[in-house]
Image 1 (cartoon, rainbow, N blue to C red):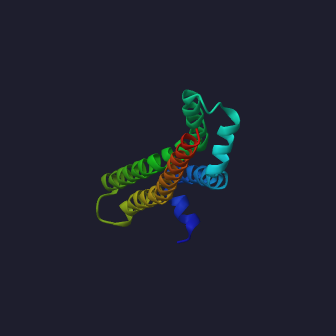
Image 2 (image 1 turned 120 degrees about the vertical axis):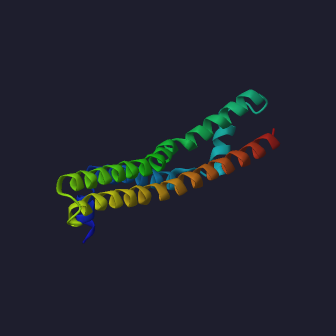
Image 3 (image 1 turned 30 degrees about the vertical axis):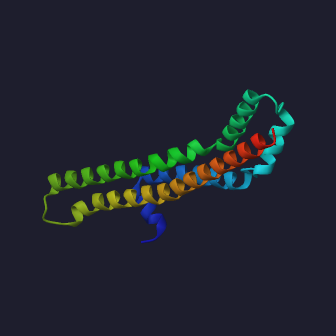
Length: 159
């Protein structure tokens, strides 16, 4: 069985997961290309504020950090929702299996194998989508935290 057959067999839930994956991978690539270096952030803060005013300084650092975090919530949501959608597909597939069993009995295993197949395909797809998004989200949060700490250290030290 090729990939397109698996996708077709998984049904609408697999298509939703593929759509979410495309959105998430696009955001991940965007973040890899656009998260600015520490020097860029520090330079932007230096140009925008009075270094003697600590409140303004803290506010500007927080503002720049929020700019760096822009888009990460989508990656986090995709990482959280994908396994749940896979589980929904699992429940649906098992439901279809029991429905087939109640209609045709247990005499022929192929009667309920279609539902089990849906269950497994959607579970696998949900995990395949979720795992890289979870890793990417944690990586980006770590990067942003490090940039924030270095910026605070450098700016506060130069006050």
